[in-house]
Length: 630
Image (cartoon, rainbow, N blue to C red; front, side, top):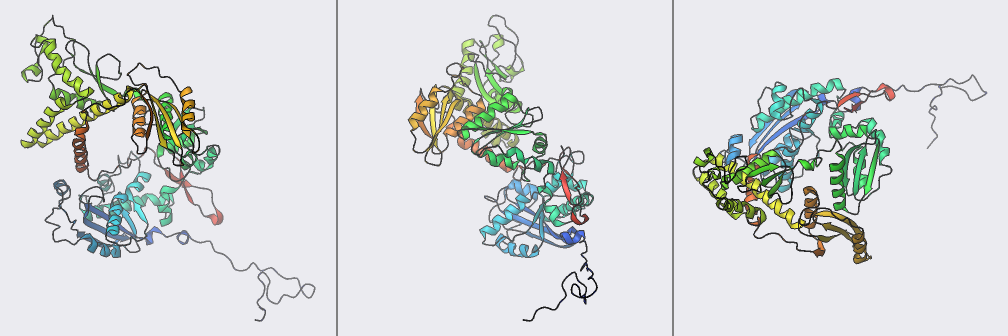
C-alpha cells in the first residue's frame, strides 16, 4: 500500500520543508461546535411515555391477580393512544374490592385472562418509558404476571410520579403525594376513581404538571429525570472521609455533630458498608440528609455479634436520645394497665411498673392501644370504673354503670370484697397463665353482634380483643425470661464457630464469640467472670422491654442452642397459644380493609430538595445538581 500523500494535520498544502521555502503556517484544523442541550441527552419532549394503572383483587401479587389494565401513551404533551381491558383474574373478586373499584366477578367472566392480555399491552408499551403512581405496585403485578406466564419482561425505564412529586412539591402545597390529592392540585381533567383508565388519565395530567416544575430546575432530558432521585449533594460526597476509620463486622455507629453531640445511632452487621451508604445516592431520607450535613465524625463500636449490637444501640438511644433517631428514644413513655392493689381494685393506665403494686399488663405503644385493651377488659368483667378509693365502711351511691349491668356497685355495699375479688381474680389468672375466662365472653359477644348484622360493632370489639390478647402474650413472654437468673445461649457464626450471649433476668450481661477450633467452655468461662450483675430484684426484668424482646427473638431463631440454664425457662400453660389463629385472622382482615396501602413515606417535605446550578463545566455546560435542604 503506497504511503499516504495527504497533508499532515496542522500544515497548509504546498508548504516546503524546513530551509527550502517560506516558514509554514499552522492551520487550526476543523472547528468543533458546542453541542446543544438536546444533543447531550434524550429531550423529554421527544420521549414516549406510557402511563399505566392496574386494578387488582388485593395488595400483593403473591395472592392477588389483575382485574383491569388501563394505559395512556403520550409524547410531547399529546395523547397518542389508550389501552384498556378487563382481565379475568381466575378467582372470585372479594366484595370489598367490588365496592372500591366497581368491578364485579360477573363483569370479568367473559374477559380474557392475563396471559392473553400481556402480549398486547407490551406491544402497546414497546419502546416507551413506563409511568405509574406508586410504580412498585403496578409494575410488580405486571412483572409477576409475566413470570407466571413465561413472558420476558422488557428492559424499560420507569418513572414513579409519587416519588417525583415528593421531590418537587412542598408540604405547604399538598399534604401528601396520593393521586387523589395531586389530581385536583394540578387541575386534572379526570378524577381518579379506582378504575384503571380513569386513574391513568389523571396520572397523565399529574405527570405534565410535574414536568412544568422541571423546566426552571434545568432538567430537560430523560437521563436527568431518571437521575433526579439519585443525585447527591457534593457537600455530602466530600464527607466520605468519615468512613476511613470505620471497621467492618457487626457493631454500632454514632454520627456526632459540631459539639461532638450524638446525632444518630444505628447498627449493622457490616459497619463500614452501612456507614458508607449514607454518603451515596441510596440514602434519600430528608432527615438523614440533614443529619449527614451536620456530622463531623463517625464513632464505631465493634460488637461480638448482632444481638450485642442491637442491644447497645437500644441503650445508647435511650441514654443519649439523639435527635435524629425516632425509634426507642423514650422507653419510659410506654404505657401499662395496672390492676390496683386495694379492697376493690380497678384499672389504671400508668407509665411505671412497681413490684408489688398490683397486676400489670402491657406494655402498650400508645394511649389508644391501652384504652382499647382496658375497654375490652371492662366489656368482659364488671370491674368498677370510678377513680376514688373505696372503703368498706363508708358507702356511697351507685352510678349508671350499675343500672346497665356493667358494675356490681361495691361502693353501695352490694358486693363484699371477697365477691369483688373473684372478679378481679379472673384478670390476674389471665395475665399469669390462662386468659380463657377473660376472652371467651368477648368472642361470644362478637359472634352475637355478627349474627345480628352489627358488623361494625363486631369489628371494633374484635380489634380490642386482639390488642388485649397480644398484651397478655407479650407480658407472659417477658415474665418467662424475667424468672431465669442466668441463661447462656449460642448461635452458629456461619464459619464453624459460635456466638455466645449471657442473659440474666432478660438483660444481656456478656457477649462474645468462640471461633472454629477454640473451646466454647473456656470462652464462656471468661465471659461469665466479667459479666455484669443486674441490680433489679429477683423475679423482675433487669432490662427494658425492648431489650428483652430482642433477646427473645434471638433465642427463637432457628439454630439457637441453650448452653446453660439456671432456674426454669418455661411459658405458662395454657397461655395464649390457642389464640394464634384468631390473631392471624384479625391481621388478614386488616389487610383486606386496606389492600392497596402504600407503606412508603410519601408525605411531602417542609423544604423539598431543590436543583441549583453548579459551576460551569467544559464548553459552558451548566449541569444541574441537587442542593441539600440543610
